[in-house]
Image 1 (spheres, rainbow, N blue to C red):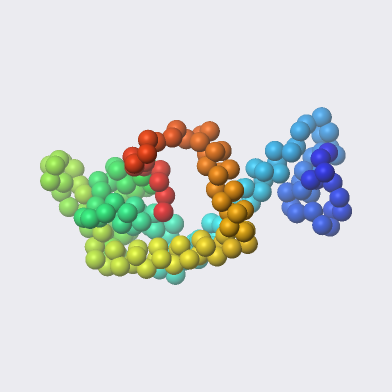
Image 2 (tube, rainbow, N blue to C red):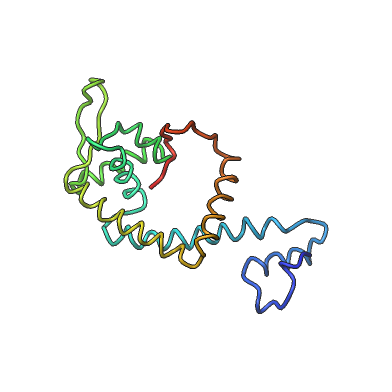
Length: 185
């Protein structure tokens, strides 16, 4: 058992208590990775909960926000083909169709035939959609700032470097200046 999982059980966080129990029950296994993976998993849940609060304030779900943000950061004329939207937001085309339908009913996007491909369609932000995502994204960035405020600027920069390095183990790097479908808001 490492120093990070020993100590007074009342002062240990949830993950450390789990590590301590596993170290007791399976001393033959290295349970130190649970310290990183378990905390990241729990942190992701907390972060998602707090991000959703902002999205809901604007009548949006996480997927709706993602689609509107993807269209907005595409730049003028703020449009993409549904297949591109699915790739940029990492969902199936079926899930994307449901999101687009919902956003279209809300007057936030429109669909029209593609000028380049007569069989294709294009999804575009409406003026109302652009106004909504501009407001929601501004609040989203303020919310993300608040979520990072418990770290010093140096800790946040170090965290970003570490996560960038680790993420590169799972995702192939892109050349500078190229867009990537997985870029998120």
